[in-house]
Every structure is written in C-alpha cells, then in structure tokens.
Length: 318
Image 1: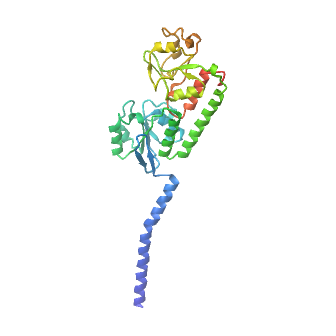
Image 2: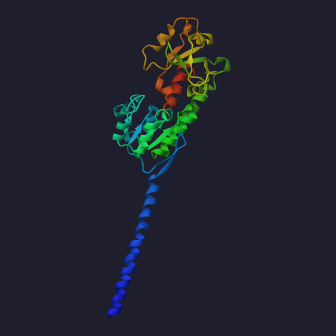
Image 3: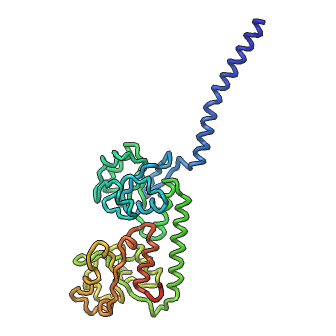
C-alpha cells in the first residue's frame, strides 16, 4: 500500500511537471494569435532604406510634416496624433495638437510626449539626423517617409504610413479613391482638342522671388492630366524664375498658389510691371488655387487637380 501511494505521488509530480513545461507553449500560441489579429509586429522599409520594426499598433504618433499628418487623419487615425509642426493646419483638429516646432524640432518636447512612432519627412533625414537618432536612442520608432514628387510616390507614402500604423487596408482604399478621381478628370480632359490646350504658368511664390513647378513635380503631372501645357515644363523641380523669362513664354493662364497665405495674389500679378502684354494678364486669365491642395503631397491632391482644372478650363470641368 505504501509503495502504491509513493507511485501515485510520483505520477502526480510528473504530470505537474508536464503541465509546467506546456505553459510557455500556450503563451507562445496566444502571442502568435495576437500577431495575426493585430498585424503587429511589422517591419517597414522607409525612405532611407532602414528597416523599422514596430512592435505594436502605435497609439501615440508625432508627425513632422503636414502631408503625413493629413494622411494619418485620412486613414481615420487622427486621434493617435499627439504632436505636429507649427505648419499643420488641416484638418482643423490637427491645429489643437501639441506643437513640436517649425523648421527646427524640439526633440526634448517630442520625447516628453512619449510617442510610439514618429513620422519624419525625407527632407529632414540629413539635416535632422542627430535629432532623429536621439529619438531612436530613446526607444521610439522613427519612420522616414519619402518626399513625394509624383502621384505614384504619394501613393507609396500613404501605403508606408498605412503599414506603420496598422491601417494598410484603409491605405489601399484611399489610394484607389485618389486614382479613381484622377481617372475621372483625365476622361474629361480627353475632350479638349490639341489646338485648345492652354499654356499655364504656375506661380508657387510671389515676386520678388518667383518660384514655379517644373517637370518631375506633381503640379506638372496635374497639368498634363487635365490637358494643359506647363510653361515651365522644360525646367526641373521647383526653380526660381526671372519675371522677364515668364513674359517671353507668354502663358495663356497664370495660376498662383499662395492666396491662402498672401493677400490679393491675382491683383499682384495683374498689376505687375512689364506684364501688361502677357496674354494671361491682357485677357484676365489669372487665378488663385488653394496652396495646400496643389503643393502638399497628401491625400487632397485629387481635390487640388480638380480645382486647377476648373480654373483653367471652367467650361470642361464644371
């Protein structure tokens, strides 16, 4: 009897030991199920070719450029944003977020906001390298988003941010929506005959230092999409232009993009000395479109293209 009792105790101990060994396997299984459910952790290859591992869905996000902020809001995750730049103005809710600086960022304040994720623009990858490294050293995930200069690159930005914040499906839907809007504009533009196409000069900053949008910019892509010719289409990027050079090109239409920030832009162009013989000025074909819609590489670019189209071809794009 005593021997039997000892055997039963030994068996119980073995079973208990088996149970202890099986427990970690159960936890690992639960972890895998959680990963499948949330999609995290994820690895994002960012604009500087760094593979950023994001362990959990970010609940506190800092955005260092307005276009990225707009993308996060468009993906219905604006409530997660805890910090933005001084330049963020859309949507209205973004203006109520903590400000972390303008051209220069307050790294200490950013760290104090305890973000899970910082979305940095590619333009700061070199100039703010030390600051971004400081954030990484503090254990914060930093994703550098590409500086988009085309529709396709804007789509890539949206998809990258969507993956980083766990909203890839919504990102795909947003990209499809933009593509459909552009396709509708292109279809209307196809009714414009080649001889009816207008030459357009887009002025992105006023005199005395006039800048425009040349080739390899999304404004140039917009003009091509809606059946217009870019008066600066032979220039690269965002060049500074001499006023006399614009007079020589004699555009049919002049479009300014700074009325939201500068008073009476149309009047400025119409009254510009030496421009009285420019066709656009003589025929009062000078218009202003909202800067943020056409110069900000975010989800509202399709709206910007439509506003541009209506200004240039009001009879076609009603």
